[in-house]
Length: 543
Image (tube, rainbow, N blue to C red; front, side, top):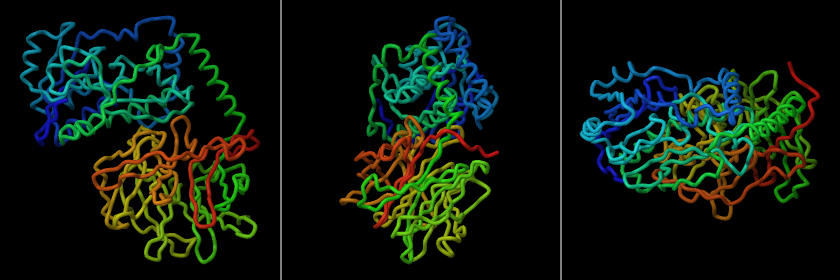
């Protein structure tokens, strides 16, 4: 790949089948127009496009396509932003850029005259959303080839990619999405950005909508890397050959089998209740020594953090009462003689959801950074009467969708780890780092953000700690279900310029009978605290 070393404006072309595009494509176009280092010079509109062959009538796949339609119609009303809603971008695009050249193609291919004119544009990258297939005629017209999304069905309406559907039923087939490129002389494409997304079993549309919104960030990230000469330092993943039937639509028999399994799960969910609970044990205790802190049936307990103060041990956690529909922060005290615990007391309540009460002691004061993504903020609270009274000290970061902020002081700087997401995408997939000279402000984003883009290891799962000389970051494995297990990752490199980590071990939920998940791990000198998720037959439902 040709690497552009200077900081000149990059010239980008976009291929569309129509100016009426899904909202996820609209966002990419707007982001490119607004970027300071990119100039959108060309839009190629293929007015004579034909329907994708995959979308042609084939009754062998009619049940899958019908499921997609029904699933979309029902669940698309339950999200904040529908990635597949169509919108006309012609006016907004042309009015924002008077230097934009639009090529309207009225033939099945690209004429020699068009090719000659496009060659004079000297494009750095062509991004293809149309033409139903990759147009080889365009590859030579861009210094860095054609960029495209393999999961995009080139604007031919909503029918979710088959591998998205199969990922809902197979733990060994994670939902992976990528941004690919094809270069001059290449026989195959390379993934220049690759990530693994979380999967929910509730709806194929939910998975598709979140994945498409998430993928809108990829192009600008890689254009920035290309402009700054970083592409040569980014690992290019060769496209892994798909299984024989993975890229094909499921036939009617396969669809029936998979939807039957999905139906059984939905029936089970109607007659059972999922409830998070807490557990603690002495540091050197055996697995069977866990004391289970079981919540009442009308609520759950999760995200435990432990702190000892004045010879008393406290566990702070999220308490979510189902009828309230949001979490508060509560605390209970542990009796070290009996491992019994006091009745929980709510210590922090807001109009918006609170969870993950991260605790941090600094200069003789105790602070808390609870999750406040419902307020689009990261907030710092100070204990004025520990553990029961807290006041807002400062809003550390505003206008951000961030969850599970976790702070460490390392190499004379504060480092904040948090999962960040855009509206419509999943909160489970991408880890960001911010750093500052002070706990109380001046937080700057890391240059490599997102430093982890993988639902199997991104989201924080508790305090970062040092053990055996290694800096270890607990993270959640959410690749197939939310909060399935906790992974322990060694932070190998942490600086303003770089970040890397490697997996050391994993705590799976089998430490407790019938446990289905564990997504928080913390400890102090005496105790280890974790949470779990069990499913029991329903006996209670709040109204």
